[in-house]
Amino acid sequence: MSRTSLVTFYLSLFVLSVSSAGLAEARGGFNPNCHVPRISLCPDCTITVKIVVLQDHECRINYGSMGPMHDQKILVGAKHGKYWADNETSTAYSPNKGFLGDDYFETRFFYELMNGSKTSALLKATVEVVSHL
Image (spheres, rainbow, N blue to C red):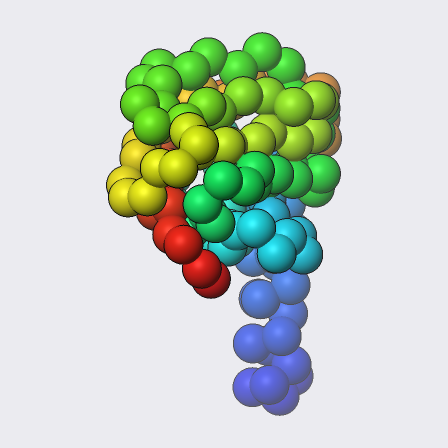
């Protein structure tokens, strides 16, 4: 087997093992109101992200690639806006009217892996509210 074939084979095994471990990604999708980095949730891990949101606009975050979300526990609420679970696969953040500057929230996601078992991940989000993107 050539070296390239071996590398491809081992990368394929790695991707399969990561998928079975329950990693999930979230994106803001095309949203002119904010920039959300790719968020990879993994069982029992802590994820730190920075979200940039346009002043006086709402930012939706879509977690469609993971299994069904269950309860979400907000551990630290946003001080200069509101963060909430929108539905089974998305959440949203909206800054207070007129606010510019930094905000922060922490939440624990409870979700289902592809094998049906339940797990959680901790998300720590720094939010920068700006006048233009």
